[in-house]
Length: 601
Image 1 (cartoon, rainbow, N blue to C red):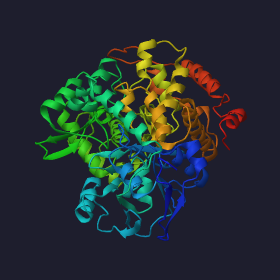
Image 2: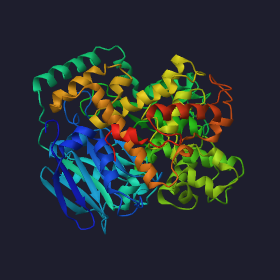
Image 3: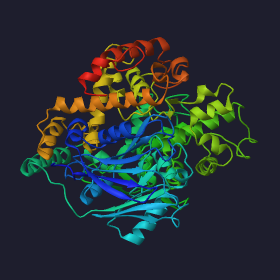
């Protein structure tokens, strides 16, 4: 099989045994790789499992473009049954892990069971071993990675969890490459539940492609196109921090727990502030000319960190009331070392602050901490409590949906989530398509599957017609990159023609597949994860596809979208249209004819 390493590695953490199996040609044909492989494995093998029990499985999977010298074949997927949502969950990660895994000879690694004591997985080409990790347990993600690199050598690519993963925080992430994160859905908690501290991989092989000359030609065209784009310099200078200024200007920047989409002090946490006050250097993932990563330094705190990028600026910055980029970078570093997803951590702490301000919780509940927007030391203290599951941190560690049920007092209105996953960095009361994208995302409130807000602006913010169609189109295109193992930013932000990906897939794999065939594979995976949710959560359906009450009932108070909201009636209209177009019934269940067309169980 060209484009694939050809093997899946199975690691039984309970017994310590490892084995390999060949990649099934039908699996590659129908699910491509990456998130597709992970979703199918979870669907087939994880049934009625406690997400934090030994019957859950953690999958790390690359795609056929991972490790191929294209811009940028750097992506891998971590997936499991999510402790945050109880359904399928995944998190995408860049850096160099995917390429290294394929060079070592594996398209995917499946972790089963749970180790009796902390271990890390050691892979050096065909040499695979589980090694004791007691001495690493308790270390932060960055510290653990540095420890392993000092021990094994810089050639090894490391993925590790921090204290949050060890303590099974529902939004614990997996860190890699001193700043890359598989952040969403609690995959770090699943890794911690298995007593798996880290993964260390070195590979000296290569990826065999079907048509080397075609891959060289197309890859060269893609790189020349990107390098010749005048917008490339913006990415070299600012990376994703430039999105914050734009987001605020359109009324989409989360502010003080999504009470607004406009932050009056956005200039202090934007791209210019980053570049002028804390910038150190630029960093790229494997094979990427965009180099959107930024290393920064906060001298007053004595820290260096990769970031903050947009989602961290949005959820820790404006959403928690911080107007200094130095504070956001510092708290980015705090969360990275603890192993907390900055999106969910920012949500959870903003939620707690709003509860505190409204008298639902008090200093007696917080261990004496006074919670207010814009207090960096209080944020860092509360993040530590969450990571260690101490005091009120133990409640918040299970996410805002759970915390609202504990706190009561109407706090469900402050819990900005869908399906148990905290909302990411776009306030969408002035963007019906974006609202629908969040509501129907298969893993919960993530922008990853369909970033539709620019369509809302171009087509008209108040228009409903055509919005469901656009969301479905994007829900097939954007996640396809996660199947292929490539970064989508070259298309989304630089306008790289999708035709390149239609051409490069057969050149790499030798599979005669059209662009429509690839989109059908992406549609198949989207429906498969929906089936998984129906099977694992009794009663799963339409009621899980609504945005938070705040977004349907409270108009935006300030900024470009002042007065906007998307009503319950409008959401119902959009859902009806969305379900009809997807071939689902009125409760959001795929119809038998849809399953037959997609060859699904």
